[in-house]
Image 1 (tube, one colour):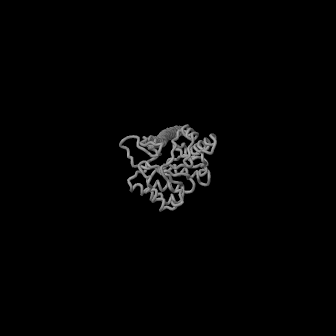
Image 2: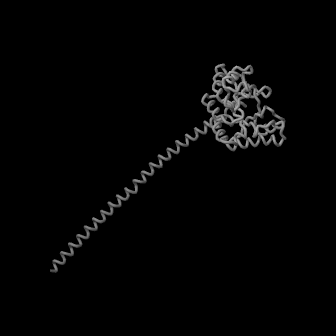
Image 3: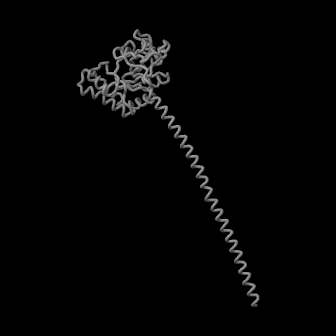
Length: 285
């Protein structure tokens, strides 16, 4: 009996050792598995970080390229000047194309300003849109102004309310010009470079304010869409292309009108067929 008890105890000790060894091996295996499970996501995260870093670097390069393009567009070297005696657009240096015309649209954005801008954009023809505060502040005027600007057209100042400046006080004249500059800047983020007085009536005060605002004032060389006999597209297109005043550097006056909109494509095509290039206002100093 004593022998049996000793044998049984020995058996228990042997089994306990085996279980302990097995348990230690199992724990070691589990720890190895857990280590693998922990390390696998770290490898995935590293790959993801590398990928994201690569994307950030590519986006950074694209941003730099876009900024460089914008800087190039903003630093166009002026090729032309405005003659304040006859309002012709003239080359600054030899070798610059003299056979150019400038297109200008007054009284925008009344009803057709944005449509006219789209027509010109589709024709790859540039222009200055001289805008009035009274039209910007009514109906969809602000949206039209934004669209005209987004299409790349120069926005000019044509006063807040289109009054004859010679009949206004010095303070009223200043208000007509500066308030519109402020309004335009609020909407499109930049102030106008060009000013055109209503009816072409400039004063010493208006010229002083324009200079203070860093703008260039201008009138025009010819325009016909405000005469009754030219309030239809066919007649207007014909006179604008065949006017006796058409010459190198001509400064063409048009308005935000239905018949002008309808004649616009024929005017641009007709001028080009005569060998005239539509000058980009950004090239005018």
